[in-house]
Image (cartoon, rainbow, N blue to C red; front, side):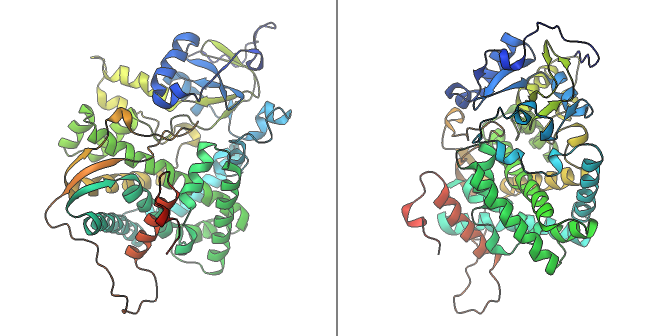
Length: 471
C-alpha cells in the first residue's frame, strides 16, 4: 500500500466530488454485498468512489489499505469537523447518517481528548472484565443466568421441540438485559432502546428522532446514577471522571450501548448462523472445543460491522490507486477486507490461525475497542453462543441461508431474524412462573425478559396486532 503523505497530487487529477459514483445501497447490495465489493474492486482497485445515500465517499476495500487507515491516526482523523463537505455545507440537512455522527463521544475524538476518554472507559470497565473481581463474576453469572432463562422461556412457550427466532427471542433480549445489569438501568429504560439503536445505525428516515430519544434516555440514566451511585458502569465512569456532565456521560453510554446491543448482538447471531449453515472451518473449531476461535472464524466470515465509521483525510494522500484529498470521507470496509484474509488463509504459505486473529470485528489501531471492552464483549458472545449449544440437542435453519432477511444499512450487516427448528436437551426446565399472589418488590428477571420479548415483537415487521399494546 502506498500512502505518499508528502507527495503532491496532480493539479488536473480528479477529485471525489467530480467523479461519477454509483450508489452503494442497492437491491444488489441487499442480496449479495460481497459481489458488489468484488465488482467495485475489479473496477477501481482497493479504493472505490461510491454514493452513500446521495453523499460521495471513498470505500476502502483492500485489507492492507483498511488497516493503514485504521492505524494511522495522524493522517486519518475521526473528528467530524475534519469533513470538508460538512464544513462547506454540502451535506443534505436531512442526511440520515448525520445524526449519529453529530453525537460527540469517544469514537469521534482524536489525540489527547480521545486518550482521556479512553482511559475513563478502561478504568470503568476493568472491574467487569476481571473474572476474579466481584463485579466480574457477578456479571458473568448474570449473562449465563439470563441466557438460561430465555431458553427456559422457549421451553415454557413452545415445548422441548419447536420453532424459535434466535434474534427476537434470545439474542436481542439477552443483550438488553445485560445492558440493564451493566449500566445500572431502571428496567423501564429499555423498552424501545434496541430498536432506536437499529434505526440510527441503519440510517432510515427516523434515525434523527431515534438518536435523540436514545441520548435522552442515557442522559436521564446518568443523572439517576449521579444521585444514586451503585456498582455499575455508569457510576464507575463518574468515579473515573467526576467532571463528566450528565450530557457527556449520556453520550458515552449511548456509544457503549450501540456496541453492546447492536455490534455484540450481531456477533452472537453471525456466529450462530455460521454454525447452523455448516461453515466447515467454524465447525472444526467448535468440534475442537475452541469456542473463542469459533467466534473469531465467524467474525472473519461475517463481521458484525461491515463498513466502519468514517475517517477523514488530514491532508492530500495517495491511498491504493487514488488520491484522497484533505477532508474527504473514507469508509473502511471490514467485510471487503476480510476477503483478503480468507484468501491468505487458504494459501499453503500461511496458517489459517494467523488470519483469524487478524479479523477486524473489534476494529484496529488507536480507535479499536479498549482491551477491557474486547474481553468483556468476547465473554458475552462466547457465553451467549455457548449456552445455546449447551441447551440445544439439535437446531436447523427453517429458511435457506440465502433467503434469510438482512437489515439493509451502510454500517452493519445484521440479521433481522434467525429462525430455527430446535430440540432441547433433556433436563432444560421451563422458566418458572411466579404466583400472581406472591408479593414482589421488584420485577423478576423472567418478567423483564417477557416484557422485552413483547416489545420487540410489537416493533419488528410483521409483529402481531395483539402484541401492539404493552401489558
